[in-house]
Structures are given as C-alpha cells and as structure tokens.
Image (cartoon, rainbow, N blue to C red):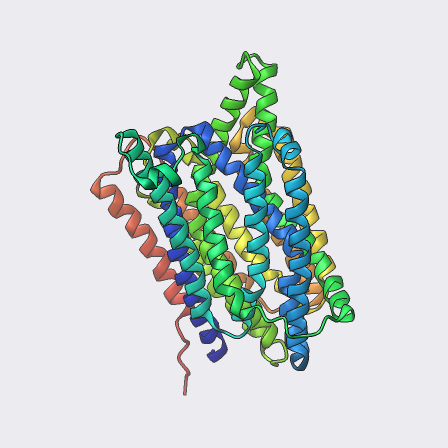
Length: 505
C-alpha cells in the first residue's frame, strides 16, 4: 500500500497541475465561442488536431524509451538523456526547415491559401514542444513533480494571458478607436484567429527557455545507445500516432467528408458555402469534445505518474498485484467522474456560453464513455512496455485506427459528428478487450474483474435511470437532488466493496 500511496501522491501533484492548467486553458473555449464564429472555431479545432499528430511524430516514442533505458541502465543515464536530446533536436530542426520551405504548398492543401504563416508558426510550436518533452520526462523520472507542475502551469498562464491580451484588450481598444503604441506595434485586426496561434507560440518559446538549464548535452554521442532506443521506441511511435488519429482525425474527416456531402446533395451551392457549413459542424463537435477534457486531465495525470512509477517498481515481487489494485481504484474514479458529468451536464454546458453549440451536447456522454475506455487502456498498456513487447502495442493501436477510419468514413456522411463520437467509443472499447486478453497471455496481472464489472454495471444502471437530458431545459431543485442521491448511491457501493475487511480472531 505504501507504493500505491506514493503513486497516488504523485498523481495528485501531476493531476493538480494538469487540472489547473487544463481548466485555465479550458476557459479559452467560452472565449473562442464568444469571439469567433463556428467556422472560425472549426479552423482552430482542425489546426490543433494536426498539432497533436505532429508532436507524436516528432517525439517518435523516445519519451517512453528514455524511461525504459534510464531505469535499466542507471549508470549510463547521462548518455541516454543527452542522446535522446541530440536525436529530437536534429529531427525537429529538419522539420522546421522543411515546413518553412513548403509552407505555401501545405497551406494550399489545407484550403488556407492566404495563411502560410500558420504552417510556420505551428512547425515551431510542435518542434519546441517535442524537444521540451524530454527534460519534462527527466523531471518525472527524478520525481520532481512540483517543478514539472510549475513549468506546465507557467506555459498555460502565458498562453491564457496573451489570448486575453490580444482577443479582449487589443480588440476592444481597437474597436473603440483608441490609439496607443501597443495597438500600433502589437495588434493587427486582420490577423484574427491567428492571435490564438501566436499566443501558443510565445508560450512554447517561454516554456522551452525555462527548460534549457535542464537540457544537459554533456553526455557523448553514442549511436549504439540511440539505435537501441529507436528500436524500442519505433512501435511506440505507432502507438502514439494511433492515439492521436483516434483522438483527432475525426475532425479532419468531418471537414472533408461533410464538405463533399454538402456539395453532392445540394445543401451548399458553392464550395465556400460547403466549407463554411463543414467547419461549423467541426466547431460544434470540437467545442463539446472540450467538456470531456476533465476525464482526459485525470488520465494524463495518471500517465505522468504511473509510467516512471511502474518502470521503477518492476523488480518488486508484488508489482503485478500493485498493478491490479491501481486498476481497481482507477476504474472507481473514472466511473464516478462519468456519473458526475453526465448527471449534471446541465451545469457543465455553461462552459460553452454560446447556446449555438449546445446542439452537440448529446455526444458528451458517448465521448465520456470513450474516455473511460481510453483510461483503462492506458493502465492496461503498461504490460507491453514492461515486457519489452511494444510491437503488440503497435498492432493493437493499428486495429483501433482501422476501426476509427472505417466507422467515420461510412457513417459521417449520414450521421455527422455523432458517428465520430461512436467511432471513438467502439475504437477504445475494442482496444481494451484486445489489450486485456493479449496482456494476460504475455504478462498476467490478477485484475479483480468481478469488482470492475460491478462498478461498470452500477454506473451504467445509474446513468440509465437518471433523467433524460435536454439542453434547453434546466432541472428543478428536486431533480438535482435526485441526481445527487444517485451519485451518493454509487459512493456508498464503493465504500462497502472497498472498506478494509475485519480480521476475525
């Protein structure tokens, strides 16, 4: 239990920083919803989908490889760290150079022909974030969770401050006819949503600068070490790409498939109108997806703490039992979060203050369920990292990608973003099942399936008997009390199942 308490403590620190950071970042959603049209928000949603994809490409699994090789070869940790940085700096620099050269071509392909600057800005953002991931991983390995948290909160704080500065102060001052040096040199109304990207770029530069003292290049270049790390990391690249595809590709597919659909069925008379309609649907889906980030925050905090924790404790004779207990507690929290958010969605909807987006709230429970599956898969996936069978992680992830692509391609033209939500749920649900049975064959862990099943069953029943959700109708006091009673019922069940057993003398 002492090791589990240590993991909980680390998760709490990472979780607090993640929750604070993500929550503050989440507050940008209502700002964007008020400042921009659905179409403009659709552009933001699409561009950040590409960012998530590119960060995975530019880190290519080296973060996990760094954990693995640093824990099994502690005496050579300095060389491992330095070589990881050498590798990422070189590939990131090459990526920035290529993106800058072909910026105009890429912008034309994305249907943003007048904004090649977006490509250059984002190439810098993802490159800086990719390099920064390694010193941040070093902080996690050394259990410097507080320092890790401060760096990330600083990054978020700078990003939010600049968004407020450009989108509220500068914009309102300009519209009110004010004239000062700030508006003269720092603000151009034609940039518009570009200030969202500029704010992110400046924040990434500051985060990178803060981490420079931790970027130790004192170790000698060792191609042998690098080759071994890349061999281990290569399947993890596929795992990471699959995760991003499952999380973000639906936005790109929505834009493309709905664009063609609106033209073919005559709903749009011109390509510009079709693009505007497709981006509008993308914006609604993206805004509502943000609500589910609360679950993602917890999953991310757990991953930050659990990866170095399980690598360090792999040699412990009770390590598998610890894995099983952690999974049990993890499921309890995930189901509880699902119930709180779905049963009180009438309150969470106000994170999106513009009612025009509320038509998409119907997919939030589906996406929350999908995130529960993702969380469980995140916990399960440690087996192939510990057993050095990362190729299985790649295979499972590829299966998930195929499911995502197939469901989205077939059903988006008919059901729109609802198809994307169900595709995410089916994808992660399938990956959980495959990972569990494969893992039990190669790295058997004594999970308490009976308890896990009970928590899922009770959570599902509570959601089923809760009141039907209607975005345009608010609950009465009695109806809220009913939902509070349902949540408390779940907590009482947890208490009776998890309370320490009395020892009979």
